[in-house]
Amino acid sequence: MTESETGTGAMLRDLRDVWRIRLLEEKVRDLRLGGDIVGSVHLCIGQEAGPVGACSVLEPADALFATYRGHGWALARGVPAAAILAELLGRATGVNGGRGGSAHFTAPEYGFHGENSIVGAGAPLALGAALAGRFDGTGRVALCVFGDGAMNQGAVHESMNFAAAFDLPVVFVCENNEYSELTPIRDMVRNDVLADRARAYGMLGERIDGNDPAVVRDRVGDAVQSAREGGGPVLLELMTARLVGHYIGDAEQYRQPGELERLAENEPVTRLQAALRAAAVPESDIAAAHDDAAHEIEAAAREAAAAPLADAEAVRRHVHA
Image (cartoon, rainbow, N blue to C red; front, side, top):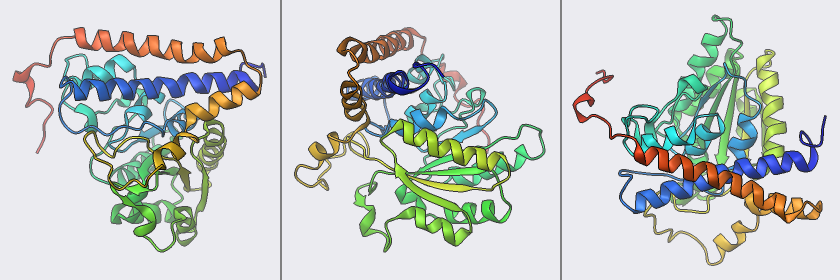
């Protein structure tokens, strides 16, 4: 392998990709606060390492199911930033023509099979994609993402049991940011090491560092390969933290004094930049990772804002009851 594929080259690429998600989310926040985006919006600022690492090991036919905090997962899966922003802005050029908004958009042509505003509801959908992969010749692996609070949902319990019983190729990814919406997960369960639950289903489970893209890439890569080769489902608990509220407008009164400052010392951008400086990478290269991402997101925002609004007369199309 070349240096661009390993070592500092890989870290610079990860830093750029983390910045892409961070800057996209900051742009979404600004547009929401300015009134250009309407409706509920949930940001993944601080949790970017998970999608960057995990999506890098997925194949085109693999199926990704995210939560309502899914903008970063969509971007990492290859959905263009302009199409994401256009969707959130209610533009005709959005991935769903402006119908899906922040919490419901989907882009199956990129292997991104949508967000879900029902907590844990992506898990049974992932089962269907994995089961179909046995019969359609794709060898598909389904990767299902949810938060720590979703681990207490019945649909997630039933999905893990079903996946294990039938050895389905599903990788369950729990993004544990230590808050179930506004409540600390430690107050919701007796054992807050959620990966321990995997043993009860008869599948592998592991808690990993969810703020390091390289660690996520390695462990998700192993899980995906095992699932693809018939090893059955895996549960990975990614330890991370969101540096913003559960939703835009969240007063975050549940935070402890100094908590955000402590979390900021361990978030992906800070850690990657520190590692690159320790490896004597020039500051110009580190800055370029940010500047490249910023150029992309700013250009995408201009393109999305210039697109025509979605046609209100078409609101009933693609609606089924």
